[in-house]
Length: 288
Image (cartoon, rainbow, N blue to C red; front, top):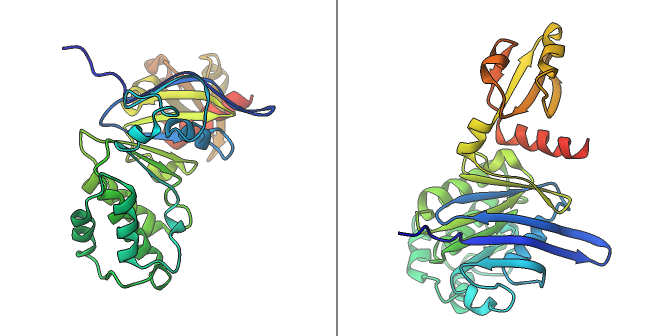
């Protein structure tokens, strides 16, 4: 059996706004059944990439999403894809039942019974208006709308801006535990790496319109290492050619790609970089 093609596949994807290069010949792929973080600072090109993936803007290069060309075949694409932006944008005057009616009217794969079943587990009634709800309750409404859409691809653009830490955690926990399965794929853009790194199966780092890293978390664990060394071992550690270093708690932490792990262990405390640490290191490397 031949392997399944990627759910999203970009080759030389480029987008300019006048003289501003938003995407600069980027290449990446997203496989089915993965939770992928598209991570970068503000202005890095995340939203432009999402707009191209969702068929909202023309582009140069080649892009296939669910085996379709997004810009020319957007109507068909959106039958199998769902886009959720910032959860704080639901209008204050909107009643919960009106929100359900609206999504049911615009998305062919929305299941009203699933949304109502989710809300039945909460204290939220259909007659409540969004302005009457706490941030946590608004999150629950948004989750009900999101998880009632039977889409193959769910795209989330900075989905928890403006929510407190408990509401953000509730959103992501429910997304992973109640929505995700092997037939669905989630693409999340964020600049708050710590929020999502425990959920992700893959990361794509983007900075100034270019892909800095495209890797599964399994590969990151074997490909990258860091070592914390005392001052008398810094020169020896630098001889191993780190791509980034920083000072913390009186030691120097040096980051390596495909290192001799035993050699590093002889120099100091061997560390596995977190996604957020690696994000800072790779983007700082690009700025050097």
